[in-house]
Length: 549
Ligand code: GLN
Image 1 (tube, rainbow, N blue to C red):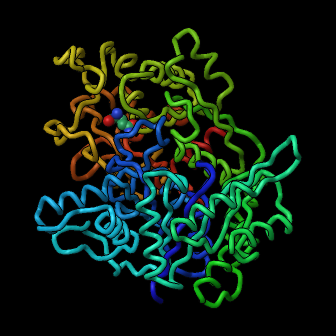
Image 2: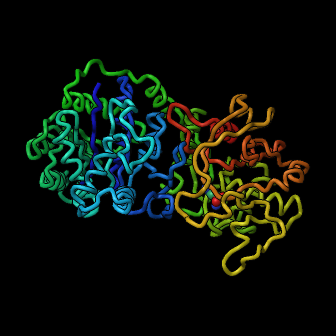
Image 3: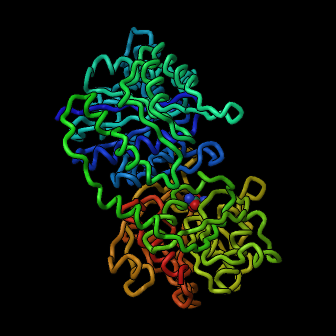
């Protein structure tokens, strides 16, 4: 089958859940047996979100091939189970960089480089995932990927100045691809309490704006907090030149995982196929997904889990939250997550702050803000034997805490915090977390960490080994510059903290645990990036399994 392209845009307001709708479309088409990928185009100028503060765009998601991406790629992977790559997350910055590098290389000699056609051509090239061109392009891109459907979500809202080149590229592609392209536009239908009415005018305006750019949407997905009746849908259909069956509503649901079946119920996937001209056939049963939803509905017993971190923002620890939720559901419980701000944790109040929690996750992060609180939390949960899961910086905090309070190195620290511009020589005698050798000469900040999937060998008989169901070689994704300092390994092991996961090539410690505790494990890698709806991550499963006891 020739590759088909679905473009997903959004209007009226941001945060409508375009990522969830894109992921749901991917899931539904996948359930029909198609090979699908989903990509995100973000209009900002950063090359990737790796250097962005989570307050700006939430969590930075990392692909297996080591690219720092938008958190929507997390939704795509969790919903569909596919692995995305660096080709699935593109920004304006990357587009411009490619074009400018090519200009400097002399590839356009004699020509004026302009937004149209040079920038829009590069956008189209990447939307189509064509082979690299001579003298430029990204290795690994290619039509030979064999996708039946490529879903492209464009970040931002229609009318934003910075998304204009993306819209122009979509306009051109629609013309070029004919029926092989479908445009799905997501809008918002507000409810006005005083008038007791749902209002479709913003949707009409948003579609007009899109039409003004030469794009006629094929399908409208209306986000709404209240049910829209047929009259309402009919009104939207006639004002916007869209078939009635192509006006779909996305009501607030108790869980984002209900969205695909809700979309299927309204025939969103069937509408897309009809537009393209492929026979719709039978509606897939989606049995594993529906079984999961049943489990979710039945998992009502609550287990309270603390997230010790510094970002008081839902999206900052998105993948960790989802991994805990999913592991809860498969453990037949509802994981109730409580954010605990590590900046506010002191030795005096830690018992109060962590009161009533069945387990604690010590979150990843960068920089010194809030780290002492994480160390205090790690000490409290270790000494009170509360199940604890340290992830990346969280694991490093467990290691520092153990050095200070068990090994007796009271000044133990990570070199991330023991040096700064005022103190170029380390303020610690015991850098139990040290910078990786390969990182020492790096000066550029963007995309230079240890990123992506690396192998890890598990020590037989360890808690981690058991959690992974007896596998000895696993692969997990990373995003860090610092690591466990192997010079201290013997002391740690002798005192009871074991190094039970080792990278076989670089000999880096990837997992530590205290076997005598109920569940006290820290991982240098980020297991949360590879937890999916149908395959919850084994470490989260094992963690919640212990917390619910
Ligand atoms: N800041 C730490 C490092 O660079 C941990 C990073 C993280 O938690 N992702 O090693």
